[in-house]
Length: 554
Image 1 (cartoon, rainbow, N blue to C red):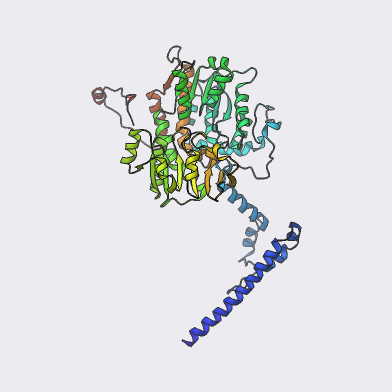
Image 2 (cartoon, rainbow, N blue to C red):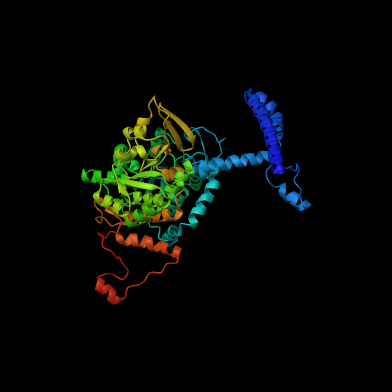
């Protein structure tokens, strides 16, 4: 017993000594860091010595012991202390950056000059492009090659149709996210005979090195990460307004390009042979033009094709919602109160993923059918104003505008995360937050703390733009499905005989939907069962499809 008491007193004495010495270290550190920068630089050695003066119970060897000379040589290959520090900073920075930055080879020392003010030329002598840095092309090419490995269906389509050149003479102007996966689509269109000019539909999702690789390959691309609003429209105009080249096909994501051509270049719009649109908002705009009798060209609604709806909207968002939230906020989902606005395919994917990780999810809906589906899937259907005060996360998935207004933002609790998985930047009323009484604090790339006068903070991701494409990655396999659908839609509209498609909006033919799906089945070593003649006759089907009527709901 006596021995125990003495040991305890010895430990207490030792701890007291350590505490006092730690206090001295803290005082030294405080004194050093309160000096000017020049003084800090002069006292780095003293600062280091102060920290190493803290005693430990165990002795520490001051030199690394090597078993032999080979081990010592191997160790010397690793970075120096400075190199390791830089490497650590680089890894930390990329892990918190957005999709394009996380995959980007650009460092913080990159030239901040606007690409519009630069004169750049690719290796072929062409300057008909505007990207962040053409010298990043080699890195971008590697990104594209990696994406190709998981987009085998699109590559298969490229190989099958390359000899026929079904898009020979097509002049395609495109406005989509510019990522490695989109680059595979663009280069497929070029391989099929098309001439392409391209710009970005989102100011945050562009991979600079991929844009550089496209420019180096000869594609006229006008896009870079972090464009201003003015830059965005300037890039679209540069794609359309070019001497000696006039677009005859449009591939759009969101409707901005279509709107620009319709408003600014009506003569060009009337001569377009077809429009392919892949987003909810863009399709909605096309239907509005059609209803008003102003749509003078046929358009293909890719967004509502089965392969796009189920795979890009449902399965893709089921994975990428978690990726985007984790990269930007490091949030733990278990027990969090989350409201998902909209229970369409995107909302279904988000709710499924969040629920699987233990979040308590509720849903807002305008459609009684979707609302009933949410109820049957175990989600409570609420109005946003009933629950907004209790929510830890608010996620929009509607494709509409002003879903989360300033009124709701004012009522949110401190630390609430607000983000958009729907479309563009219309769902969250971000403009209402840019007022003198609110302070914006950028804490990470694509992560802003909006601070109210009472100190409350709302965490806004990607300034209300698409979370998964601005802040994380999207699986190449899923984008292969969408890209193959887009390519087939362009081929169909461009080669369709006169009179097949009128001045209206059409769904992708069911046969093409099934063909897109069949191209992706080999990835899973899947084997389809074939109908016998008797079975096909009984069902009233062609043995080769289509296997479902157009009204069938998958």
